[in-house]
Image (tube, rainbow over all chains, first blue to last red):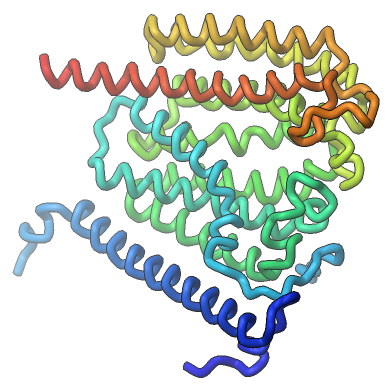
Amino acid sequence: MTEPETYSSLPVAGLPGAGSKDAAARARRGRNIAIAIGLVGFVVLVYLVTVFRMGGNVINRPL
Amino acid sequence: MVDITPPAVARAALPPRWQDYVQLLKPRVMSLVVFTAATGMICAGTPLNPVMGVIAILCIAVGAGASASLNMWYDADIDARMRRTRGRPVPAGRVQAADALALGIVLSLFSVMILGLAINWFAAGLLAFTIFFYAVVYTMWLKRWTAQNIVIGGLAGALPPVIGWAAATGQAPLDAWLLCAIIFMWTPPHFWALSLYTSEDYAAAGVPMLPVTAGAAATRRQIWIYSLLLIPVCLAPVATGLGGTTYLAVSALGGAVFLLLAWRVRSGRAGDAADPRVTDGLYDVQAAARDARNLFAYSILYLTLLFATLLGEHLWGRAAGGLS
């Protein structure tokens, strides 16, 4: 996905333009990783709930 | 339609980092919620599958974080005027107010839904009520309206052990409400001690905290009265069998120290206007307000000790029961 023009060009006081792009990129990368961890964590959570709530009933069902 | 952009909030140039969103959840408050909810869950005495127990605690913690995010969204204008809170993500401009609102709503829905589906709907209902009480009743209504804001609003912070108990058993018996009562009665002396040396901030922000509306002397008197009421409530678990002899010793001795510190506040001049040149560095506390700061710091230790002792007694009891 391409970066919106306005986002990557955000100015940062006291820093040259390249620095602001680096800071924005670092922040975006950090947020993306956090979202990825959150999503994986949610999948694991649903998996664990399913396994522990259903327990042996997963096997003991009419096939 | 509600304007979700507080006017006093600054805009920063730096884009938000993931740490800013974590800060919206008030992680330190979350840790206290986790601790008290876990205590309620363990004290319930009904063994819950450890994985499901962790999931329940996670849901309660996320629910607490969600209500904190909603609080930071709504209170951004107040936070911007107070030294203690002006560095928070929304007033500092690092996170948009609308983002804090969205995060709070999404996490509220997910935490309640998962707790209901995974554990039970009684606990989920209690969690939903707690979020509503903190975000709407306390934040949007009580906080800006009455000096009794933290007295009534303290219920939101007191409910996590009941939710933990309900998660384990599906019920909320008297002992669960005793844990709730301890935190509920502890909240006024704890926060009023803090507000005695931060009342200028609250006055500047227009928050009707007791020292602002009734004065320091009335606040010191109320701290003493609530401290006197707190100690018997802390001893009550011994009468019902929830607490053992260790808990009795900790609550009685710790309560005596609490009363001593509260009496020092009562008989001192904490919160009175003092020489503005005399400070001791920590939040510019006037020398006269050190008693209030001591009570504030000790109150955290006392509550932690009470719940840690209960937790330890019940874990020890389980371990001993398992060995015998």
